[in-house]
Amino acid sequence: MAGSIAVSAEALAGLEFFEGCTVESLSPLAVHLRTLNAAPGQVLLRQGEKAVSFLLIGSGHAEVEHVGDGGEVSVVEVGPGLIVGEIALLRNAPRNATVTAIDELSGWVGGREAFGAMLDAPCMLDKLLRTARQRLVAYLTPLRVRLRDDTELYLRPVLPGDNERTARGPVLFSSETFYRRFQTTRTPTASLMTYLFEVDYVDHFVWVMTDGADGPVVADARFVRDVANPSVAEVAFIVGDDYQGRGVGTFLMDALAVAARGDGINRFTARVLTENYSMRKILDRYGAEWHRDEQGVVTTEIDVPQPREMTIGPKFQRKIDSLARQAVRAIG
Image 1 (cartoon, rainbow, N blue to C red):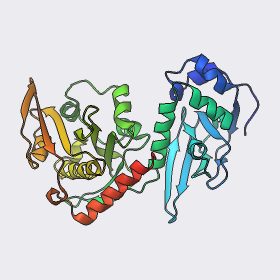
Image 2: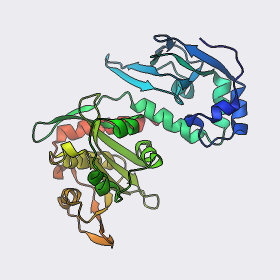
Image 3: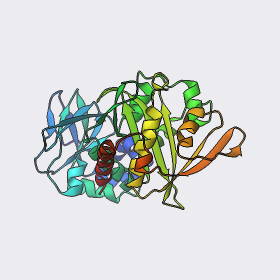
Image 4: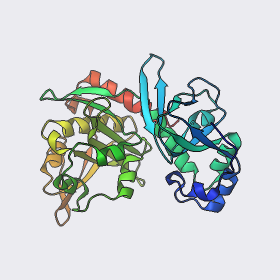
């Protein structure tokens, strides 16, 4: 339950969610927050009720459950440093999910004054928008995909937590696989992984494939729009070692093309290692001409594949397009 103990701006500044914010910028927020302590199983927010507050999690975990109009259920787990309940406040709408404490949970509760103070903090607006976008996308239903060898995987936009699930999951991404993807022998840094998995679904779109609807991430593919030329985007993807050679990369390339065409992108660029023959072979199908960029690296630029050129049929293309458009609409 919520208490009345004063909240420290210093404590807020120590949370990952407020990384980059000064204690001074968080002081107006701190005075509008109350402490929160909840027992396992306690319902903190309920779908459909009027939104009058949001929660900041300091310790413990909570389950965020959304029931769609057709009765489909989506569940996301959130933990320390994350905010929940903010979307309804942003939209002045009823709660779109029920939030229940999984274990002993502590944090802070804030109302509209607190939310206004958070929006006024110079360091917070972009972070809040990104969180709201990804929370909405978490309610999308993955598409089941059957590959050419009858492997069954699931396709969906990247979600909050995929960074952690990929880094600590059971799927092997060997040093050689990372080297081909990131063109360095170093393990990707935490900041790089954060960038790769926190996206806006418009200028930076990411598909992931999972082994099971709620299973681990086995591959991802992304496009990043060129700031100078918004009709052009760079593409890249990575596939876990045990899933290579099954057509995952080819499928993801087509899925990227569907999403890109719906987002006003008509040219793809790629920068890959000369020896990354698997990615080069996929792009060769669409007329790639390779040019040496530097020692061991080549680049190309191609037209985004037309629907008739893809390996997936029109019906499934429409399903992919619908899923991608849902992700884009979630930020509107």
